[in-house]
Image 1 (cartoon, protein in one colour):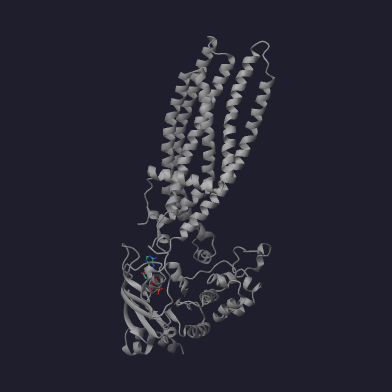
Image 2 (image 1 turned 90 degrees about the vertical axis):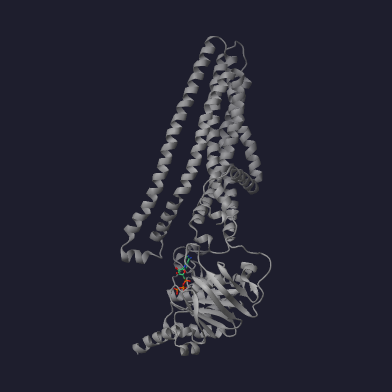
Length: 610
Ligand SMILES: Nc1ncnc2c1ncn2[C@@H]1O[C@H](COP(=O)(O)OP(=O)(O)OP(=O)(O)O)[C@@H](O)[C@H]1O
């Protein structure tokens, strides 16, 4: 199992240290100048209250001494007061800015890492999705990490200043105040871990809630939800997921509330004892009134600095535990071992599946069981078989979305595993059974097949014409630049949302074909049910065009319409993961096997209708 799929929340000390180092270096790389300014201002901001406390003590002492001059002290107080008033806002602004810069850098890195998962396995793994959402959450909360650093540093500086001041007045009280903070620190660290663990455990509820939200708000399921009247049912499930998450959070909040209430009582007790001691000492003449004021300011300052420090450390710990998910994603091994060296040679002989066995995981049944199949260079091979026979799975293996569990696939003489996946895919064009309909312009929908063609109107039109869609696209309000969506408007059309149009199912299918055709110089064309949504006339027209297109090219065609595959050079029948029949259409018909039976069944259906 890849590191990214690890379901274990335990984060070792080493991982925590790695989290800290990674977070700090990320923040530094994103905004080094701002971080330097932030550190300087934090130092000044932390010194301001200590200076205020000392200046106040001196003012009081001089006021109680006949003839004491206080003018310059008052000026000093005005300056520190001004600093204390202005600096927090400046610090907030700087931290927010640094947080945004670091967030952007982290988000980019995260998505680069997601792209490094070259196959599909990670995307079918629920632990990967949980971790990914937590990682996204962690990048969104980098600003809080920056806040934590700023606050924590400020806390340390004012703690040092106030502890030094308090030590001058009473070493015993200093020890008591510091010791009283210890249980609070331990308790909060424990709570931070519990919170991180709760967040991990409830992630599954949020992910399911998000799924129901998308169902309830998206256009894809809207028709069925209304017709079947299942809106309330799905809504109840969505609310159920949220309630489960809320219940876990509430238990956590209550635990924190109890602990924090106890800690507040402890702090108040220590402050009360300190006050009692200071007043008694002043009565005995051991402390001046200025000393008492300084003492009170120092006790308050130490407690508040410790509180800030505690919450910064625990906040940091919680954020770092979440950040560990980010690190797990960005450092995860790719789901398929692969090389970045080498290239995919131009196909000369063909592609051969040699005793290929495949199952989606050890817990799943075998989908392919010893498949031997050759797609010779320049030939059109068709693959047919019943639902669930394994045809689309075989296509995914050819594109190296997965590796065979056993056996090998050879591109000429080279094992697919020895070819960099991106280079292999550069040589393939495909229409997938579950092709995408992108909520973008028509130009984008075709151009995503080959980005270099996006601004080459000639290539766009040629691909669309081959898919029988050029006239439709040319007649759209903005031609090829018309957004094929009414969900949102892309590009410059923000003020003119009326230009978005919605295509029909068959038109989308033609668009997917055009996207495949625009990659016209590839070595292998895969067509997995490319015409299932087309009307009979369109299907006939498209198949004629595809036949022309396939001429002398290497192609693999999958279709349940056997009339569409009859003139392939070679037809293979896949049944329960095995090739059970193969040969030309005439050979297979003459053999009288399952291909012949299915072909005659389909033909009879049409005959009966006549
Ligand atoms: N991602 C997956 N994880 C687990 N099992 C899968 C996955 N995709 C497909 N399967 C299973 O693999 C088997 C073959 O599916 P596949 O989609 O390859 O069949 P097919 O021949 O293309 O079927 P159809 O004609 O219905 O498109 C099915 O039993 C299916 O449930």
